Image 1 (spheres, one colour):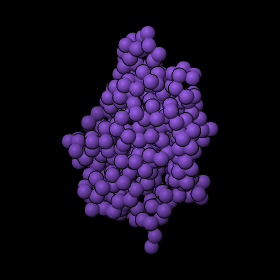
Image 2: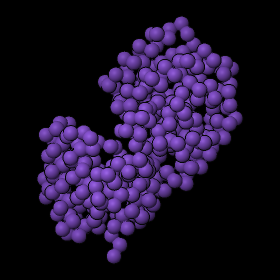
Image 3: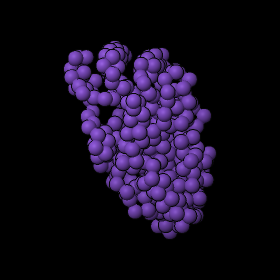
Image 4: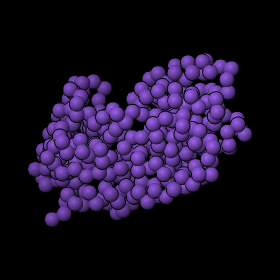
Length: 324
C-alpha cells in the first residue's frame, strides 16, 4: 500500500495511508480522510474473528458515509478468501460497497467478477528492492553447490516440501544448498533443521533466516537462484500475484517456479514448469541462456512493475472513478 501511495505523491497527487487499527472510531477515521476525492480500501486485518468483524463494520460504515459525501471508493484485493466462512462475507460486502474493485491478477479479477456486479480492473504488484546486476551460478560441479533461496509468507510453506522432493531428484547431477527466509515461529526453522540433518554427509545443506526487508535483499544478492514451489491446481494459489518472481529477477536472480497463471507470462524470464528438478538442471546446464532470461525479465519489470509504473496504473484507475 505504501509504495503506490508514495508513487502517487511523486506524480503530484496528495496521498496518505490510514490504518483502521489506528483509528478505532468512525469519526477519527473520517477525519483522517477529510478532503479526499477517492479512498482505496485494503483487506481488513485482525488478530481474532471478533476484531475482524468489528474492523470490517467500521470500514463499511465509513464507506457509506464517504460515498454519501461524493468520495469514490476502490476496494483492493490480493487474495481469494471468498470461500472462507468468516472472511468471505466480509470481502464480498466490501466489494459490493465500492465504486471499483481492483485485483492483483487476471485470475483473481475473474473470481471477483463472479462475486460482485461492481466493475473490476487489474493492477499488479510493484517491486520493492533495488535493481541488481544479473548473475548466475557457475556450471554444475565447478564451484560447489548451487545456492538456492526460498522466501515468502509462511502460508506458502505448505508447497515447499513437494518442491524440495522434486529438487532432490536432480541433486545427484546438481548439488544445491537451500536457504529459507520467512517469519519465525511458523515451522520453517524446524523444516530447515530436519532437512539439514537428513542431508548430512551429502553436498547439500539447508538453513533458516528470519525474514526482514534487509535480510531478504541481502539473501537475494548472495544466492544463485530463487525457487518458488506452489500448487497451480489450488484455486487460492492459482490467483496469486507474481510479486516473488518479479522481485527476484529485479534483483538479478534466476527464478525456478511452478506454473501459476501469473507466472506463465514470465516463462521467458526464468524457468516455469511442473518439475522444479528439471528447472534446476536447465539452469545449471544453460547459464548463458539463464542470464539472458534474467535480463529480459528486468526489462519487463522496468516497463510494468516499478513503483512508478504501478503508481501510473493506480492514478489511471482512480482518475477513472472521479472523472465527470
